[in-house]
Length: 374
Ligand SMILES: NC(=O)c1ccc[n+]([C@@H]2O[C@H](COP(=O)([O-])OP(=O)(O)OC[C@H]3O[C@@H](n4cnc5c(N)ncnc54)[C@H](O)[C@@H]3O)[C@@H](O)[C@H]2O)c1
Image 1: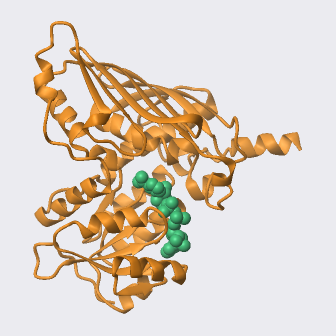
Image 2: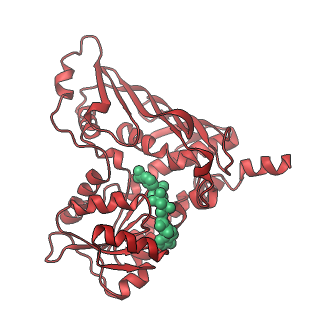
Image 3: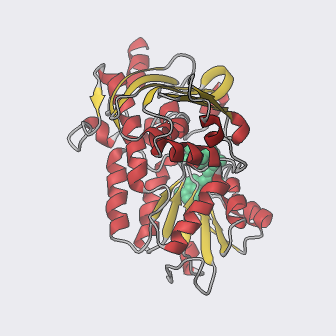
């Protein structure tokens, strides 16, 4: 097997394999094709009919049924892992063992233990890992981070982070959905994670969480809704709701600072129109700082630009495993608090904690309820 670590600035393009050619792989291929110095080299799927149709659509020269199979027939520099969640970490470990760069769809792993294993593997590999959390990359979110770090908005005070989505029962009938061992959790891990990743990216380290999770309306092994109250190290407080049972769908972020309220309302991606900015009385001049002609939508295209830029300049991966760990730790804490009835502090879920190796703490809560009803 030949692999060669390189970047787009080298004398051949960055040769990329897409692993898993289902729904989200189309967003990856579309975004990769718009980057400079990229070659979509191979489409990899356990179902050859899918990889072949995908390769036809994106004019990809080769297909394969596994990464090993792909590497037997040509060199690669990077893979994008677009498979169901339980295979993310094993496939990323395999790719790192070949020295490849890896882009992993969310969630990057099923547990904090798997995240740490990935960090160790990355440290020993020539490859790097970037985790897809595409809402960090819209220009409005980047402007917000910049205004905040300049101190123009004052202290963060109170926030709300809502993922009110709707998934019917048929959605959960797909075998890999709604199972702790395959998906790692319900809407907290699979849906709300996009929004609270953006919240923690903007507001920085969280300190403590109290949460509830319930299964209210779907037949699934996991929660279908969770609600949390989070205190950040800065002292700011935010609520986080992650639901897939909400008929009017929306994704919302509201951030109240000393000198302004910043709000985002969208569904699966935003541009400038989805944001609003309300200065506090006496701070009206801040409107000018917020206003911008720069309007880059959040999404895979914007994140891939950051990933390819980081690879070509040797900068840290974007979003790195360390950055993603903070988001995954918040997901684990929401589950741990919900299932133990106790507040959870950041750092508390260590290797000895049952929520370190599985998001349900190995309790399988709703399965047990159903078994006891039977
Ligand atoms: N970032 C986002 O906005 C976003 C949106 C949707 C889905 N996702 C994530 O993307 C991932 C995939 O979701 P999807 O909806 O595209 O799933 P999907 O079921 O449509 O596609 C998954 C594909 O992977 C293939 N596959 C499964 N195991 C494989 C393996 N070991 N090796 C090679 N191929 C394999 C399947 O045959 C299938 O073609 C999930 O983790 C999901 O959470 C992210």
